[in-house]
Structures are given as structure tokens and as C-alpha cells.
Amino acid sequence: MDSCEDEDLETFLQRVNEISELVKDMSSTDPAVRERAMDTAELRTAPEPCTAPEPRRAPEPRRAPEPRRAPVNRTVINSTSPCGEHMNAPYEPNQSAEDFMKVLEKDAEERRKRRQVKEQRANALKEEGNEAFVLGDYEVAVRLYTAGLEQLRDMQALYTNRAQAFIKLKRFKEAISDCEWALKCNEKCVKAYVHMGRAHLALKDFAESRLCFQKILDVEPQRETMVKEYLTQVDLEEKKSLQEKAVWEELGERKQEAMVIPSVLQKLATPDQINLYYCGGVELLAQAVKDAIGQTSFRLNNGFSIISGNNSVRRCLTQTSKEPHSEELCVSVLRLWRVVCSGNEENLKVLLQCSITRDQIARLLGSRGPAIQQECLSMLLTFSHAQHGRRLLIQNFSGPRTLETLMDCVCADTTAGSTALALLVNLAGDNKFRVQCRDNFTLCFTRVFEKLLRNISASGPEQLSSFISVAGAMCLDRVISNRMANSEDVWRISFSALGRCGSPGPRTILYPLLGLMINIAAVPNLCIQDHAVPGCRRCVALLSDSDGGVITRAAGLLSAILPTSPAATHEAVEQGVVKRMLKILKEAGHMSSRYSIKVLAVCTTFNQQACEELVTLDKSKCVCVCVCVGLTQG
Image 1 (tube, rainbow, N blue to C red):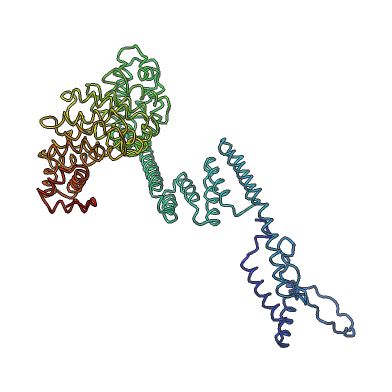
Image 2 (cartoon, rainbow, N blue to C red):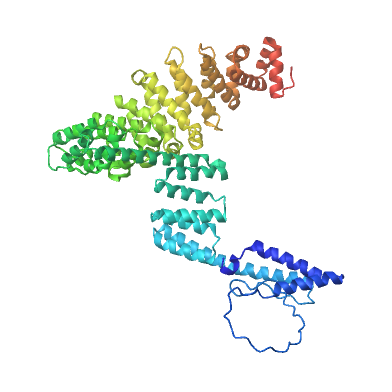
């Protein structure tokens, strides 16, 4: 917007209204009204008196008075604009109100065309700035966005884009100023609040940062998840700042305990020592780090770089060292990292941001050394207990590769299998991990599930139950659930497991297994038909179980199987399912009753014997089922 358009439009429009009334009065049939209008027009066009004092002059001789001139009508629609252009044409004495409004419309059209040209230039500069931003040329991006704003000063996107570039250049105050201007253009600009919150966070103004992020919810309440993540970042940064402040204060007081960590790190930086020397130093560090202050002191004293940069340590972590005590040193370093990063989000972020360290941990996860693998799994399990830790693990490690490694650990009959399974339980609760593992989860599940079932006594019912729970959590993803439902192997192994886990088998597996099968049976598929008859027999057998939860889930799975197979329906009726469903209806709760009515409805729809049994056993229940499915027979 140029300087001509910076004039207050509201004042301008008010003047237009006044002039329109004046024009109407000048055309009035009432001579008095016309006279007042002419006087008003004369006053409006009269030049303002000069306020500066004039210099004194000598008195001039008195002259004869000049003849009086007729008044000149200087009425104009608007005074000269700030840039020296007339905004409208002058009013002519004989000009009608209609002609006057046409002049205004012409002026408005000219303004629109000028703005359209400026918008095109501004948009072109914005696109060039975006290209520079993507390439990392933030200075160039700022110059291009600024040039765009010179064309159009009320373009919100240019302000927010330039603010983002300013943040990259660490010019945070300028970014905040641009966000404020963007909000003047559009008070509901979410990007402005986001960038302003980030800039305040970088300046460690945590209260203002929180306020900016919270204002997003006033504009778009559905952004609650995003706002929660930003507020978590603010909390973490504030926590980090307070911890660092405490460390510097403690070091400033020169407390003996505060000097232990820097002293040990200095000794560990000494090159060409034997592995036992470094192993002892790392163990001392792990003992010295007792709280958050110790963890922060380790980071501020460059502990991660000193440990990872040590050649002996690096060879042990990559498992290329043939020197004595290499395994002990590797285990000690992993234990140190676990102690240093446990509950400390900033330390964990620093550890995982190093690509070399990430690769080392990924390799150690599949190490053939049992002690190394167990310590690596224990470390990752500790990190995964916190939501932020899980997120960092998922962001920094390949989901499919991690899944396959952990599944291999679960298959192995070792202590590491339980730790790997616990880690899988934590990761499966995160949607990003589920999305990453869509392509390989079904194959991994069937391979491991079948192996665990073959040796239930060795793996233990608890471990198998936890593994099924992992599958249930992963099936919350629509793609995984669809692939599981359409897998022949999944149904074959699952129905086989039902037969092996029933009485007198390991019954603790039944409850999660039935729940998993109900969920995937809800997905339309053809694979279940091939296993419907034997599956139906096993479900009917479980209806006599002593556990009410197992009975409810068996009825639920049966209600999903029967509609897919008339043969299975006939088998269920022959097995006495009608009588058992009626018993459940009399004794069970809402969910069991719902499943029972669905089973009876399917049976009576496709099997005449079921209808006769229902009428004979309980006419009132027969009416209820008939109403539910719209049957006409009594």
C-alpha cells in the first residue's frame, strides 16, 4: 500500500458523506437551504490562516478601497492527497449527485487496479523469498520479503514468512515485530502466534511464549494437540534453563562435589590409556551423576563429546576393538548414558542428535554379546517410559528396523526378550511408530507369534499375553488392522492359539487374544471364512468358561464369525448355541446381551432349527430377537 493509500479511509468516507449532503442541499428547491449550502462550501474551500507571525512593516499610505468581487465557488470533493494527487474531480456547480458518485466509482476502480498490480509484484517476490528460504539463504529471503512489503504493506504472509527467516538468523526481536504486524493485518493469524511464541522461547521469555501458544486455541480450538506440544517445549526449555543456572551457581561456589564431574571428564580426555582406565573413569562418572544438576553439569562440561570422541571408547562401541575388556567398557558407557539421560530431555536430545551415536546404539541393539544387548535394551527402555523420550526414539531410529530387531529379541529365549517386549509395549502406544511399521508388522507378528505358540512353556503365558497386547495396540492403525484382517496366516495362527489356550491351557492368553480377534474381524475380509467352522466350535466351547470376560469376548467373536459363513451358523446351532445365548441374556450385562442378540438374530435368520429352539425355550426372547432383526415369523 503506497503513501496515497495510507490516508485514513474512514475519515475519507466521512468527508464523502458530508459532501454528498452538501451537493443535495445545493440542489434544493428551498432558497434558504441553497444559500446555507453555498456559504458552507465557501468556508470549506477558504484557505486556512497562516499561524506564523508576519514581520513588522512600515505603515503604507492609505489607498482607496477596491471594488468588491463576486465570491468564487472553490468547492472540491477532497483536498489534495498526501502524494499530491487529487483523489476526486472538483465539483461543478451544475453537477448532479449521480455524476458525482460516478466520479467516486471511477476513482475506486483506479485504486483497485493499482492494488492488483502491487499484489502481483508482492506475490512474485514472496515466491522468490520462499525459494531462497528452502535453500537456506535466509538473508536473501529477508531482502525479498522486505521488497514485497514495499509493494504491499498489508500482506500478512510476507510478515510471517520474514519472521520465520528472522528466527533462522537468530534475530528474534525483529521476528516478534513482524508477527505483531501480521496480527494487525489479521488478528486470527495462527502462524504469527506460532512464530512469536518460538521467538520469545529463544529469548527465554517463557511466560510470553506460553501466552502466544495459548492464544492459538482462541482462534482454532481444534489445534489442542499442536499447542500441547509447543507448551511442552516451553516447559522443557525452562527446566533446562533452571538446571543450567543451578549448575553455574554451584560451580561458582566451588563446591567439592560440583568439581568431581569436570575433573573426571578431564582425565577421560587423556588419550592412549588401557580400557580398564577408561572403564573405571566412566564408572566414577556414573556414580557422580546423582541428580538433574549432575546430569546438566555433564552436558555443560562437554561430557558427550569427550566420551564419544575417545578412540578407545569408539572402537568398543563399534565392536571393532580386539583389546581386553572391550565389552566391559562398552557396557559401562551404555550404563553412563542411561544414568545421564534418564529423565533429562535435553541430555537425551543431545545424545541422539549425533548420527554416529545413533548408529552405534542401533548396532549394539542387535549385538551378539548378551551383556551389551541387555544394557542397550535397558537404556532404551528407560528412555521410553517418558512421552518425550519415546518421541525422540521414534524420531531418531528407523521404525521398521527397530521393530524387526526387537521382534528377534522376543523370539530368543533370553532375558533380553522380556526387556525388548516391554520396550515394544511402550513404542506401540505411539501413532508415529505404528505408521512407520505398517509395511512389516503383519509379517513380523505372524513369525514371532507362531514361534512363541510352539513353545509356550518356555516363553511363558505372561510374555505371550504382552505380545498379543502389542498387536492390539498396533491394530489401532487402520492400515495395520486391514492388513492383519486380510492375512491368511493371522487367522490360521489365531484360531490355532484359541484351541491351545483354552482349558486346561494357559488361560491368561485368552482375554487379549479374543479382543485382538474381535477387532480385526470387524474389518471386512474374506480370509475368516476359511476358518469360520473350526473357529465357531472353539468359540462355542468357550461359552462355558468360568470367566465372565472370556464368555463375553467369545460371544463377540462368534457374532463376527457367523454372518460370514452359513456352514458356521449351522455348526453353532448344532453345538447348542441358542440355549447358551439365552442363558447369557438372562445373566449377563449390556455388552454380552448385545453380542447374544446378534448371534441369535443371525442363527434364526439362516437356520430354521434355531427359530424352533428359540420359540420352544423362551417365547419372550423370541419376540425380542424378531423385533431386532425385523423377522415376521413368530
